Image (cartoon, rainbow, N blue to C red; front, side, top):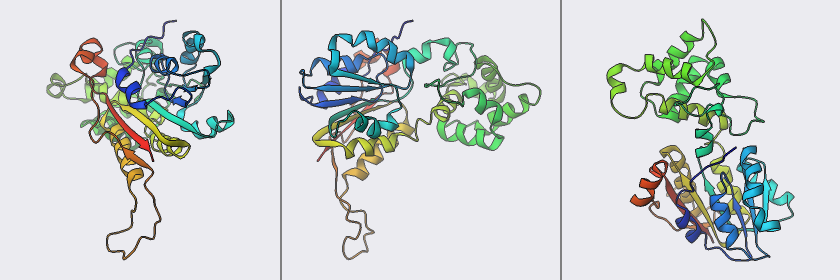
Length: 311
């Protein structure tokens, strides 16, 4: 099994983490271990890198790819939403930096049997962690028309969400929808031909929406940021790469909230919230991939890196 994944904004991430050789760092989304390997190279024997991934394939591959670093690297088969508890269970109180490369990995897209891609025919799955019960099949075949419309509209930002949801429900009255190609054909029927002629693949937004719902991708970002900052040493950095506007909005807003001192209404004569600024925003505007990187790795095109520093 190959686990190929080109690390996005690699140099920019390593530079912005400001790695201390004896520090403790967390890679929340290890994937193919590209970022992890570069972080580990900069650590002394006293430094530690904790690598999270909910995909067991990534964990198994990383055991070989990161073997040269020995005890400096600790692999954790878990979602990064558990960062605080998992770090604590390792006997570690404080960390010095966090990296999260959000979204689906190239390996998951390219391994047809996982059902992430609308370009390959496969069972409807899309689970990043195969221990999870609900798959894309459950959502497509069991969600109500209203629920399907809501997630396709909100998570996929799809203009034809209502028709797509209606067509899915109509189709499954006769038989269950089993494969990615079955779903693609339904989506194509739902979107008028003229609308399909321009823009991305007609199934792109719907597949994104279902994948986000299966893996609760948006629901875990805010809590991860809050938990990471709460256990971070002063001057520690948190670097997050997003790939679509929904993720980026959450990261941007949470950084902004954590950077604020007081959130009391302006009409209040004095502060009653006692909120204190916890971070300094390093990137007022996100760092984008260079033209050269996009040419080498087209999947990096939509990537945005935002960085904050613990006060």
